[in-house]
Amino acid sequence: MPDGSILLQDNGSLPSINVSGVSYLNGGAQINNGSSLSVTGPTTLSNTLLVSNSTTLNGTVNVNGITSLNNYTQSTASNNGALVVRGGVGILKNLNVGQNFRVYGNTVFEGPVTFNS
Image (cartoon, rainbow, N blue to C red):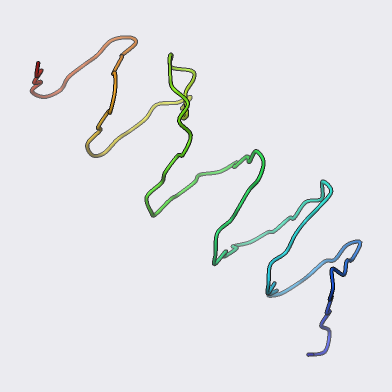
């Protein structure tokens, strides 16, 4: 083991640890009992991130792959359903709706409109 290394085996624990420089966790890490993990600077996760409870993200979220929301809660108004967006939505490409489509407020069409029966 290199100088300055710490090796914990068989569910070993530390009350706290401050690490400077590059750190590697091989085999995973688990944080229990309401503890938190604070990371400053860019962080790379090379596998799935599983979050078991609510999550708050306080900045911009950029997703480069396909994003799937796997909640099937039906929407009955603009403030409920599987996805609720409190601000405007800009959609660059096609929008396909699988069931009913309802608009609250004014509607403006900037191009030709076709209604099929």
